Amino acid sequence: MKLLSNYPAEILILLFLVITFLISVVEKISDWKGTVTFIKEHFKNSPLKNSVPFLVSILVFLEFIATIFMIIGVYQIYTSEIKEFALLGLELSAVVLIFMLIGQRLAKDYPGAMSLTVYFILTVFGVVLLNS
Image 1 (cartoon, rainbow, N blue to C red):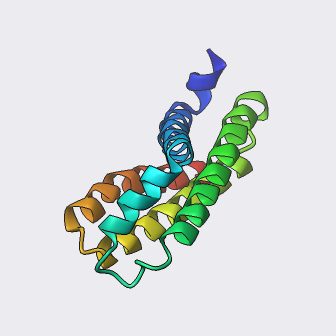
Image 2 (tube, rainbow, N blue to C red):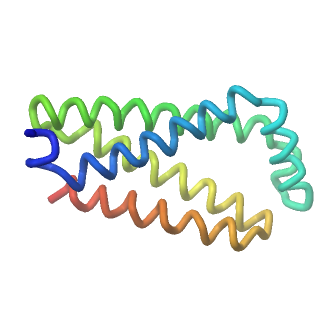
């Protein structure tokens, strides 16, 4: 089982984040109106309240690109032990999580901001592993 024997932690982190971001993208797109309505309500008292559809579009796009990079990265690690796309996917994931953190903090959703920490730690750990 070459896939998990050479880079088990890296592959598992990538798969976890692929599932997380892919489901997030599919949920947001499949219920766009509900997503925008929910997030508008969430940000009603923040400086972001008038930019929600635009910002959610950017977030979905970046989540999708990060997911594609990570999928390609898993394939490349498996076939040729090349890590560049996986690393790009993880780095973009970290940027997406930072954007989400900024939004949660501006909305004064401190528990929501705190819950992003787990994803961010896992993502940074993946970056560290892929750089070593």
